[in-house]
Length: 559
Image (cartoon, rainbow, N blue to C red; front, side, top):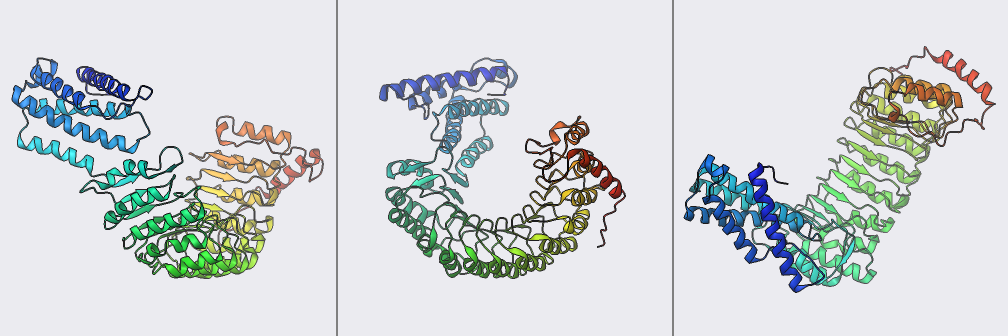
C-alpha cells in the first residue's frame, strides 16, 4: 500500500495494474496454466517510463505545487527512477522466489511513486540528486545476508541451484552471511555451489549449513559435505552452524578441511547431529583453536560420559565462552564432573544449559563449585539432572553468592523436597532481576512452596513466569503464591497445575486472579481429591494451620 497521498496512491495502483496485466499476458502466452507476475517484461518497463515522463511534465496537484519538469529532464529522471525501483523490487523478489511476484510488483510501483515525488520536490535532477538515486540502487545491491531457508523443506538439484544461488555470483556483492538451511543439497546442487562458495570465502563471516542434506543416502551426503568443506576451507568465519545433519563421526570428519582452517570461530552449533563419543573426539581433534569461542551448543546428541570428556577439553580451552548448551546429551556423573571442572575456566559465562542429563549428586556438587565463579550468569537451566536435595542446596548456595543479574533459574525434575527450600529461597530472594523461576516436578509440597513464595514477596518487579507444577502443593501453598505474584506488575503466568489443591482452593485462586485471569495457568491436571494425602476435609484444616504457622516466616538471605 502506498502512503504518499491520494494522487500517488492512484499512480501506484495504476502502475501495479499495468505491470500485473502485462506480466499475466506474457506468462500466459508461455505457460497457459502458470501465472508469474515478476519480472515485468521490457515492454512493461518502457510503458512505465513513458507514464512517469507524462506525470512529471503534466499538470497535477503535485506539479502545481512543485513545478513541472522539461520533457528531456522528465525522460532522464523517469528512466533512472524505473531502474532504481526495479533493482529494489528484484532484490526483494530474490528473497521469496517461491511467490508469484505480487509483492515485488507492489514494491516496484511504490518505489516509482515515492521517487517521482522526490524528483518533483527537488526539481530537475541535479548531479547531487542523481547521485542520491544511484546510491539507493547501490544500497539495494549491497545486501549482506543471503537466505534460502524460507518456504517448504525440499530437495534442491543443479538446475534450481543455478537459479537460486545466482545473486551470489553477482560481481561486487557484499554477502557476509549465508543460510542454506531447510534445503537438501544433492551432488549436482553441491557442484553448482562449490565454485560460488570458493569465490566468496574471503568475505564470508557466518555460514549456516544446518539441515542441508536431509533424506540423502549416506554416501551422497558425505560427498556433499566434503564438497562444501573444501569450498569453504580457508574462510575466516565467526559463526558456523552444522546442526540437524546427523553427522556422526563420518560427518564431522567430512568437514575436516573446514574445521582445521578455523581458528577465530566465535559461535559453533552442532545440535541434533548424532555426536557420539567418537564424533566428539573428532571435533576436539579437528578444531585448531577455540580461544575466541563465545557460543558452543551441543543440544540433543548421544555424547555420553566419554564424549563429555572430549567436549570438556573444548570448553577448557574456550576462556571467552558466554553461552554453553549441552542439554539432552546422555551425560552421567563422570562426564558431568569433567564438564563442571572445565566450566571453572569460563568466567565470562552468561547462559548455561545442561538440562536433561544424568549428572547425579556428585556432579551437582562439582557444578556448584564452577557456578561460584560465574558472576555474569543471567540464565541457568539445570532441570532433570538428578540433583536431589544435597545437589540443589550446593547449587543454590553457590548462585546466591554469584550471578547478581540472574534472570532465569530452572531446576525442575530434580527430586527436591522441602529440605532444600530454605537454601533455594535464600538464593532467589536476592535475585531482584529474576524474570522466570521453574521448580516444577519436584516434591516441595506446601512447606517448601510457602518458603519460596515468601522469598519473592519483596521487590522482584521484573518477575514474569513461575512454574511450581507437580509439586504436591495444596491449598495453602497455592494461595500464598497467588497472593504474591498477582501484585507484580507485568507478571504473566503462574503454573501450579498437577498439584493437589482442593475444590475450595481452586475457587479461591480464581477469586484472587479475577481481575487478571490470564495470569493463572491451566488447572486441568490438578487432583482436588488429594489422593496421596488425607481426606480433603482434613486437608483444608491442615493447610490453614500450616499457613498460620508460617505466615511470619522470614527468608534468611544471609544463610
